[in-house]
Length: 211
Image (cartoon, one colour):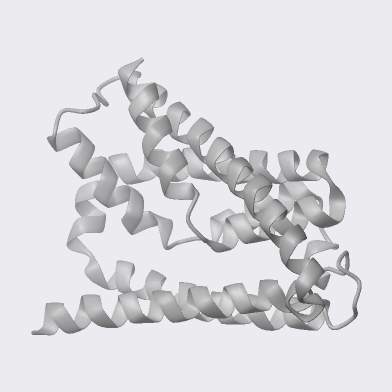
């Protein structure tokens, strides 16, 4: 139970800040409803379940291969900008339900699987948290106990993203009354903001490392 609870709390809190998975989940909810959102999130958490198991087993390798982490961070910045362009093209009309082409070619479940497969920036996040929680004695991952921890993280991610979507949807509903332009282009702006934030974080991290 301790493993489940710790995994749930860490994952829920970690999934609620702005990130491209929760932003796309919000658009999924707006355009296709709660059933598609649920299907999308199931795809997301399946990949996260497998990825966290991998980081638990490959923590030492990942820690010793800093270039891999650096490459994932660069790719995440490029991907954010690509999403910004995609959502801008998909929302040039005034319809709030217009969506980028990549969101219409696959089922929400498959889209959740695919998008979280390329969400490589979460690898260093979980590597750091796993090492900290193990070393601090908050979790025990010997034998089958690691599956309890990873199940907790999966439930936490589902819950965190779901709460994020519900809250931000209410905020955007109110905002659209005052700024129709913002309601049309908000997703592109969010992804540009995420790319800028990730770039600043990347610069500070590696400038400090070089210094």
